[in-house]
Image 1 (cartoon, rainbow, N blue to C red):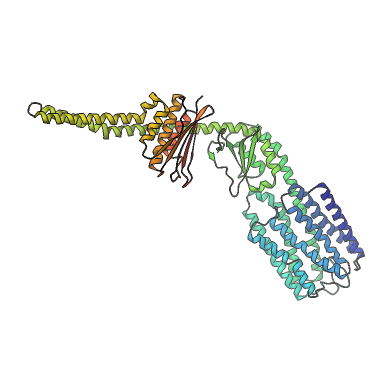
Image 2: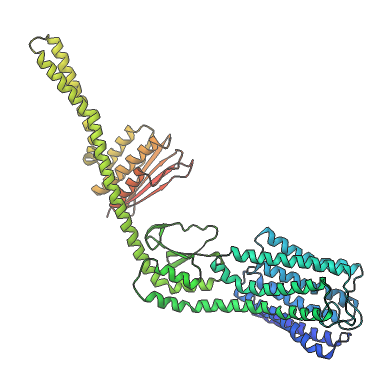
Amino acid sequence: MRPRGKWFVVAAAVLAGVGAAAALVRGGYEVPVELVAPTLVLNLAVGWSFVGVGLVARRRRPASRTGLLMVLLGFAWLARFLLAVDTTPAFVAGVLLGSVSLSLFVHLLVTFPTGRTTSVAQRVLVVVGYLLSAPLDAVFLALGAQRGRGEGPPPNGLVIAPSNGGFTPEPVDLVVQAVVVVLLVALLVSVWSRWRAAGVAERRALTPGLVGGTVVVATLLVERTAILLVLPPSAGVVLAWSAQVVLVVWPVALLLGLLRSRLDRSGVGRLVIDLGDGPAEPGRLRSVVARTLHDPSAEVAYRLPGTDDYVDAAGDPVDVAPRAGRAVAHLVRDGRPIAVLLHDPVLTGEPDLVEAVAAGAGLAVENERLHAQVRHQLREVRASRARLVEAADGARRAVERDLHDGAQQRLVAVGLALRLARTRLGAGSPDELDALLAEAGDELAGALAELRELARGIYPPLLTDEGLGPALASLAERASLPVVLGAIPGQRPPEAVEQACYFVVSEALTNAAKHASASRVAVDVVAEGDGLRVDVVDDGGGGADADGSGLRGLADRVAAVGGRFAVSSPARGGTRVTATLPCG
């Protein structure tokens, strides 16, 4: 709200209070002198407290409707004094506007602190609350209800005083009070359910308003129940005064909640001191931030340089995508994102507190991010070392199996053929010897071909002799599915990078043929900055597991030369394997 608008509301509230006092004193009803001052003091305190705290809430949380609702409630409360003017229009306006204050109270308590309904039960309570105010009163007024208008103090309980000879409410009033009691009970149940379902941080934000509002509701509930029970006038007076006295509690409770937020921000200084004491233990920053925000579920995730991946203090990957029940605040240093703060969504209502905590923890976040990066790298190195050992053992077993099942069997057959030829050297015919020697030659040729194929799989000679282009062209020709080979840089990269590039394409083609049910694969190797970017894209079914042994082995190979490896494989969207390899 703009300053001019704020002062306009303040002036209007002052004028409404002055008008209320004038109506009470000069409105035409006989009010006992001893009741004028208490009535004015109490009612002005209620009305002005709601308006004042509402303006503060509006300034503190402009996105929330709570402040606006409080201001409206304050004016509706002061508008009740139209009942003190002894005319029919004033009586009608006073009844209609005065009853709205209870509906606004229900709306505020049900939707605190956002002022917006978030469930069907809340919407029902708010709608019923409004239907029981002006619309219902309009029906009763049209039917001729007078609500105690006539001799004595102003009607409708504006001035709380015992009636002479007691007061017996009309049946229609008893029905209305019974419905109001049911509404108040439902309101208490709603408040209790919200508080039980809330987390620690949300409870901290809700408690001041809900506790104060619960006290008011409980007092109103007792007062309206007393009306239904037709208690003696003296008891009704005490309960009526009590209901209005405790109504002042709620704005004060909300104001205390606002002051608590300021105290929380002042606790950021303690956060800086706590982070400066003692060694940087993993997770210590998270615990200090969680304590400062009063949110035990708060987490800090650190961005790995050059990637969009985040890890916690121990180096474990963290999913920072927005999800239900979690809000994300990005921490930026020198214009670059370094971490994110995951916290309870209720803290989005206190952006200044979150920003203050983020700023206070900035240096510690940078330091712990570096530690987390090192821990993540150590974990990756250990895991990569284990995978390399496992891959090497698997490769040795595969070579042994290939030699045993292929070349070894052929060489055994050659030995048998040669021994058989030797035994028949003197007795056998030349044709028979020629056939045996021919068979031995064929087996030797087959064994040699298999050994060459095996050697090509371990390390292709064509890659060493001719370079990456011819080696990838040979891969494309031997592939079991069509391969479209894009442009290949003419200048040969370093040997380690060239080998990594070759095996990335080889493994990706093998996966596409075996698992992707692809009909076409495109391979591109392009220069990018001081390195190469390898893209292998198929049109298969997608859903590739980036943590599978084959792709994980490729990631280790790429990481070994300082590169980055990524796999994108949405369901039914094909698979893209990308490796960025530095050549410097």
